[in-house]
Length: 275
Image (cartoon, rainbow, N blue to C red; front, side, top):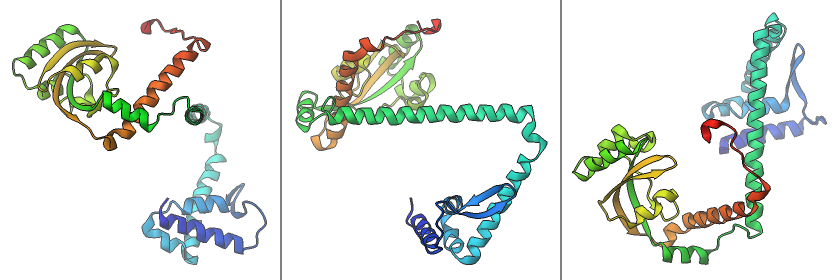
């Protein structure tokens, strides 16, 4: 929230308090059966672009802004009184909108619940990672690597591209043209610099054993077949790596915890295409 927006809300709150109104959300204006409340007015006023906010705080500005809201409410009231509201198309689209809102609310609740659950596990020490654990991890895995990759759907195509790359082909151009992973393909197959634990399991040990400049593959994974090229490897200071390592360790501990409770939550893949 910007300083200017905070100022708008503070001024409006002061005006409201000074009015002596005892209702929790007083009505500012009525438009037929609809009302504009103080909270709605304040909320929408705070969304006015910054270059107009100083004006809408003036008496004339606030009145003009209210006129805008009144016009909007009049449009809503007129639409609600029309035959459109009774139409099958409106009812169908409104039901679809309601279902989408319910799904978003469900997803939001799940995100909130899982975040608080992880916070609780961390507070109880189940998945919490310590600085000593992070330092020990870095002693065992002190390097960070830069890798390019090409992801393909079948081993024959991957084998052919690996052969071309080993014969001096331009790896970045081949990645742009052939890789199924569009995001990295646009950057010549470049992956984010990775610590041990930040690479998918099928590739992890391989990329940390490879020599700089080496081509490896095809390597089978759950995503497809990879051809890899190692661009660089370097030792990384603890201060730069600490947060990432803590995340890696916490993720590993969470996986271990999930394995320990898996029997309570049996998994069944129902759709045949995924079996």
